[in-house]
Amino acid sequence: MFLLVPQLGYALPFFDKLPKFKVRVSENRELQEWLKDQLNEQRKSSSVLKSYEDPLDVARYEHGTLEKLLRSRGYYDGRVRQSVSDGEILYRVVPGHLYRISSLEIRMPPRLRVGFPGVGLSVGDPLEAKKVTEGVKQIETYLAENACLLNVDVDYQATVIHSEHAARLEYRVAQSPEVRIGQIYVEGVTTIDEEFLRKRLKLKEGDCFSRGKMDAAKLRLLRTNLVAGANAEVSEPNAGIVDITFIVTERKHRTVRLGVGYSSDDGGGASAGWEHRNILGRGERIEVETRAYEVTQSIKGKLLVPRFFRDDQEFSATAEAENEERESYDAESISVGGAISRRHTKHRTFSIGSELKFSQVQEEGEESENYNLLSFPLGVKIDTTDNLLDAKRGATVALEVKPYFDLRSSGTQFTKNTLVMTGYHTFEETKFDPTLALRIKAGVISGADNLEIPADERFYAGGGGSVRGYAYQALGPRRLIPSTVVGEPPELSDPIGGRSLSEISLEGRFRITESWGGVLFVDGGNAYADAKPGFDDLYWGAGVGVRYMTSFAPLRFDIGFPLDRREGLDDSSYQIYVSLGQAF
Image (cartoon, rainbow, N blue to C red; front, top):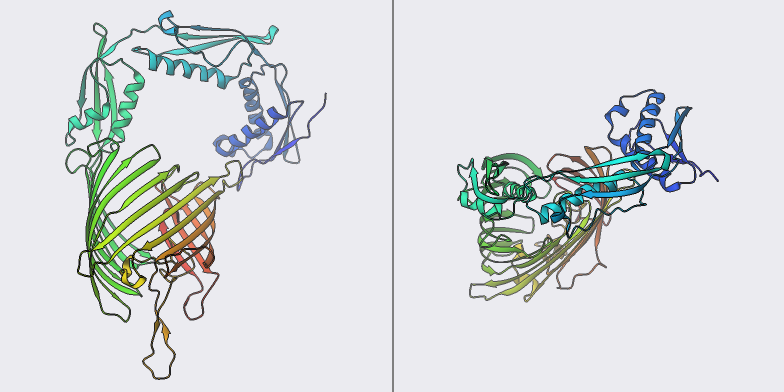
């Protein structure tokens, strides 16, 4: 017999005033580590513990917690002793005998018992609370999938026999009639197409009744984003038939947005928008947004039709008029387009569309050019992330191939290819929940020389969504402009954009409190005149950021510094970026 070296448990991740503690468990290191982890988790969330100032009060409270935890693992004779010294708590745990299952019985009607695979426990297994309750869920799942019970009621009884250090375990399924679905009613609908909601239910007359199917139907109603609440009422059985009434509460379908702000890319300005999420009664959404900023002014309309001929397919149409006044070019454009996207699997989406863009582009020191560009974008996206605006795990891969055809007499043709990959991993067992985030972007334009491609379609690098620390579109190839003064050397133009692009970003994100977080980042990138992207000629920037976690998405504030500052080209030694959502 021997004692393990005590393990130190640090209570709270930050600003924690609770006393430190140690846990000693004889001859059971796995149990010792588990108890320590459970106490740490409790300290993160317990408001009762946070109200205690005396370490003795904390020790008494956690003493009861440790006893409950021991019983949940099958140690019904366990003993816990605590002592406080110099403000630190030492818990000495003697778990005692491990109680095991001496008999296991599952009481359900014989007709339902056929084919039941069991609860995952057998005689001789430890009596662990988590596995016992998992057995209840396994029975409920089996009955929901293989029976038509009006009510599924499963409970269990564990009889502990201290003299034998064992327990008798019994699961019981309450008696309930088996029924089928009769009439289905939908009430509370005012502006939504009722037949549209009925199709979302995926229930029909004569189906086997299941509470699980009803819950899934209510969830599908909520996922239309047209319904704020959904309840279901079941009639009394009549000759083995029950009617179901779904009572829905519609959401408000219109939203008006007004805002003012500052963008490091576009300067200061204002925006306004209007949205209707049920314009035709079946979840069709129309949006109109206008923006008036120092650099860009635009008005854009979008129509989104979900479940377009198929439940996994949607159609979108857009129309936009925009004016850009960039340092390297001015552009006025009107574009219209449409696209169909289909979710092939849970994580994979394909899209195809077409777009017609009429534009007038004037580059620095050049005459304006008119373009009538017809394009056919093709895309595929794989997304396994857990959150669109604040991912903590998973990855994305997005590839777009966009052929362009100029309908004017010039006959210019080119294809714009863009690949973006991101990855996220959170070290959940580490203090501050650090997340490592990586983004890689590459682009190539083929089929035309650089200056034959409209300036607003070329690749540029630099800015808040690219290489932080450098001004927006500040990186990339430049032209030599002859001096107007005789004898003076030519000057470099503003960036003219390129046929290829390479970018890489690495972020370390961490949470300080529930509402505040921080970021350390390094970005690299460049645009090239040739269609040969690479990662050996990049400009690098680094910086720090602060995140305020709102209920919707993080509010981002970053300050970036150019590590390869160019004399005469990079006027500022830092750049500031403010936006909603993570950088990527």
